[in-house]
Image 1 (spheres, rainbow, N blue to C red):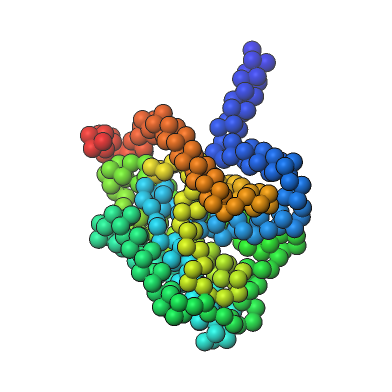
Image 2 (cartoon, rainbow, N blue to C red):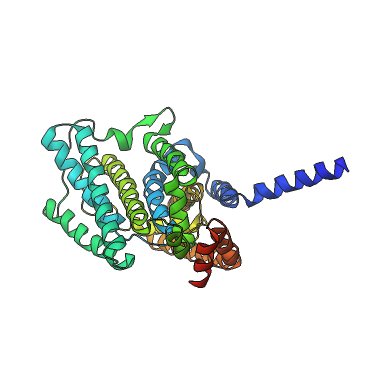
Length: 347
């Protein structure tokens, strides 16, 4: 009997490991790296792997913020324009004060400001997220172009490029920052009331309202955090090119959405982890770099990323359908009986 119990526990432990969010993506990532190395040995050189990590870092950081917004069941299309504005304002502020730190700080604050604007429009003005953030994408891009008269802003203060080009031992500094922010974002989602409420809103908005959650405030906070992460990503990208550029990352929002989807996060909201987001960003960066190393044209790279994203969303949608009713029962289980009945009636 004891042997059967031990065997049962062992099987349960293995099954739990295989069901752990992100475990499958980690295996896919390892397989892609090995295949890319076999096809083109240059891919596994230290120089190229460091380049992959440096390229993946800002995408991963921007994707953390996108993930938080998607967890609530919303979307943010403004990330690319926010990053462009961050780079322009960051360099201008750095030049004015003569301090790289001031430039980085000003850039991050710009990201937060755009997050507040997006969140206010979506949460309090009730503008659909797609429309609100598309508007921010448009006027944000226009502002970035206007700040430099359509040109890049060169000659930032000394040391401005450290954040994007520095290293910590063998690792690029941006990647170390992405790992630190991954831990913080994970703790936010899993260990704080804000994180649990973000997931709850995406899982069952009606249930969240009935349980007393201030849905508008939580939505606003999700967009503010998305702006914060976009600001950090923009400062890193601007630091890497050591200039402010109005066209710095025009499609970053779509890459961030792709990273979230490829990582296996539910695009309907309410389910996902930051580890999945990180692995999705890393996988996309590896795929792009591998195709680059074997001299695949940019056009085919875009096609490959698009196909991978669509397949991920299809697979994730099927999984959402299987787990939807179970997820709704889980959220109802967190509520008082009367509120749970109201949530069930509102579905």
